[in-house]
Image (cartoon, rainbow, N blue to C red; front, top):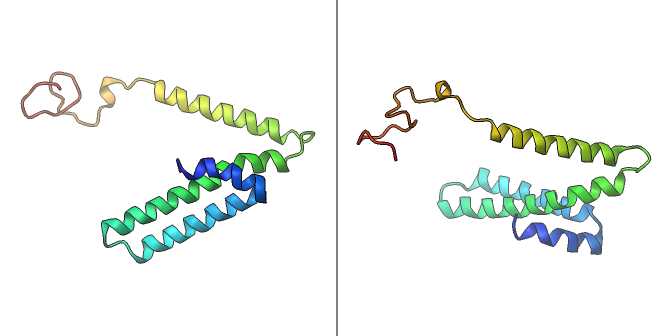
Length: 124
């Protein structure tokens, strides 16, 4: 994703925004087919994950341009998309910022109140 994402705008300038999305979809489908067919060795899984990353990088980088290009400004879709994106980010940050209560710990045998089960009896 890190390498394919920045390449998507260059491809979009030359061939349009649909081409990176379609190429990313083809890469992702090919990678999932590779995982379904050959997943016995670690190298095959690494290769499939790299191809999935390339596919997702191309596809996700082009989605924003496709929305902006194809949504009429008068219809309000662009503003609605922006509001939806901001709301999602706020919800994600809020959910991540909520502290856990001590009673919500999965491990009921906490040592020293730190939440970790240690063999030595001390919290790391």
